[in-house]
Image (cartoon, one colour):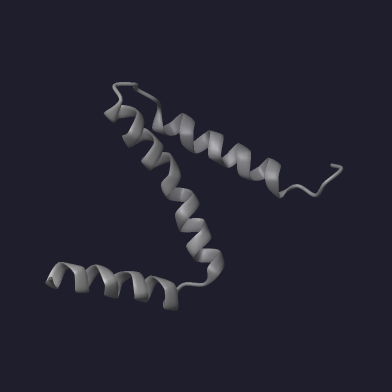
Length: 68
C-alpha cells in the first residue's frame, strides 16, 4: 500500500512540477531504453547508441517546417 502511495505521489509531482515540454523531452528520451529492453527480452540485440541516434534523426525530421 505504501508503495502505491509513493508511486502516486511521484506521478503527481511529475505532472505538476514539470512543464509540458520537459515531460515530453523526458518521455522521448526514455524510448530508446524501453525499445532496447523489449528487444533484449525477445532475444534480439539492438544497439542503444543506434536507437538514440535514430530518435534524434527522427525528431529533427519531424520538427522541420512542412515543405522544407
